[in-house]
Length: 195
Image (cartoon, rainbow, N blue to C red):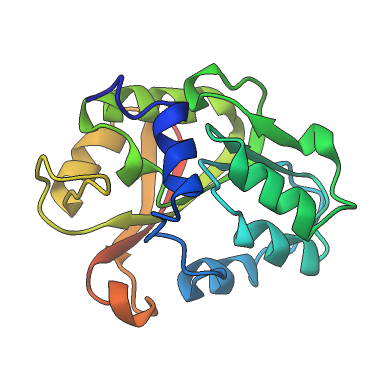
């Protein structure tokens, strides 16, 4: 499975319009969290960003130091077309596990669930290495039974607690109260900080 979910796989999903996760805008739980962030100088990463509508929202709120990473080229090209003035140096086409640098804030939105489940421990370790000491990882994780059918791959609050608690302090991990209709009661909002 791990090797099948490579950049070609994701590029093909964009080329053939098989992007069911793409709702065409930022979702409410992420928007409402961003609305509370006061420090506009934070260095922010959106990994596995896809078409990155969250980037548009960050920019509209005055954030400039936002980096977008994706395995596939098409979504990054879509961002370039949509926001031609956005610095190309902040668009990164890369395997997440090859990313470098330190970030104050990392946003999770349908990226974790797109990874093969055997990579989840690696994801947690990589996120830990990318966050600054006082950094935060926040976003949404799907809350439905994990099966072989995916992506998206599901998971549970218990699984995520076990997964993150070794390297992170779990500040919040609760059912999102403001999910968009198709995801109601099926996603958890979380905030974790490095131990």
